[in-house]
Image 1 (cartoon, rainbow, N blue to C red):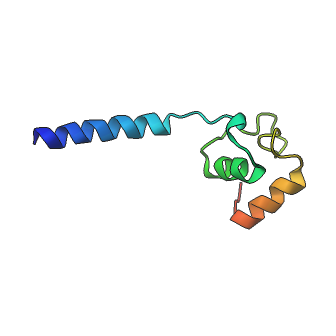
Image 2: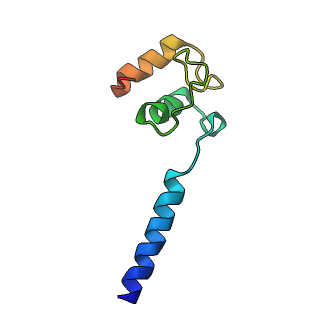
Length: 76
């Protein structure tokens, strides 16, 4: 039982720390990576200026973002 409790505590600590990770646009090397994270809700503030283009350091146009969204079936 003690071993189970230790594993449970470790897992809960790890899960919380992973979900608390705040993504940054600098973490993405492609627009597709950024759009996927944004659409999944993993980086909700990626589009800080609300122009429909997340992470403008890797996404250059709304058309590019819309194409990726269609490809991955993102309804955002």
